[in-house]
Image 1 (cartoon, rainbow, N blue to C red):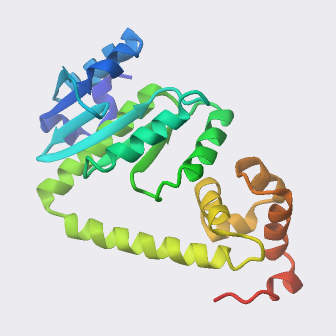
Image 2: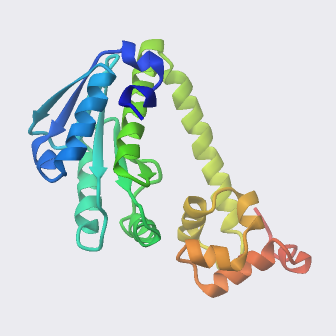
Amino acid sequence: MKPADRIPAKATNSAGFCMMRNTWRDEQHPSFINFISNFLTANSFRLKFVSIPADFIFNCGGSSVAFIFVTSLDSTNVSQIFGRTQILKQQFAHLYVICTLPTKEQNNLFVRSYFNFGLELGKPAFVLVKDLEMGFEKMLRIVYARGVCKREDVTTKLKAQREQYVQTVGVFQRVITSIPGVDNHDANALNQAVGSIEAIAKESKDHILENTDLSADKAEVLSRFFRDQKFYLSPKIN
């Protein structure tokens, strides 16, 4: 697949700038850097290698967006990655973290680490991908979307949508934590790994155990809560 075929046609009409951190480039395989260079050229972005705190900084349509691009996550670098994220989110108004997680073990490590480091949901936003090329494609799509929003002055709409999302998350947490023994950490883990309340209600105990760090007792309580009428009518939901 050619790079120009992977981004909406309008993006090729919007010239922009991309700054890549020198040290990040030096850590990657030359073939991936070549892919990035060709991808950017095909989509009318000019690439510069500079010394910057983030891995990438884009400017498109007057909007600047910074990225941390995690190409490999393991137990030896997870603390450094999340610590760096905590620092950079204070420096950039628009920061995203692209995280490549090709295996189930890496995904489980990410979920555990995310909540252990106490990151606020969506601040910054993490984009989880299966491979490097997909990660860079997602990155450019985010940049393009930000540029379109800037040009069309839809900031107010985005803020309203975010407020609605925050309210929805609040309702989700209140409902899930009303289940006996389930706390805020468990609610966040379920939201990340399973999704909506409807999705949780349909999932089996085994699926919940496999995809979250909830204990067997808590998974059993969740399964009973949504299936056993006598059980789910007993707690009071505020």
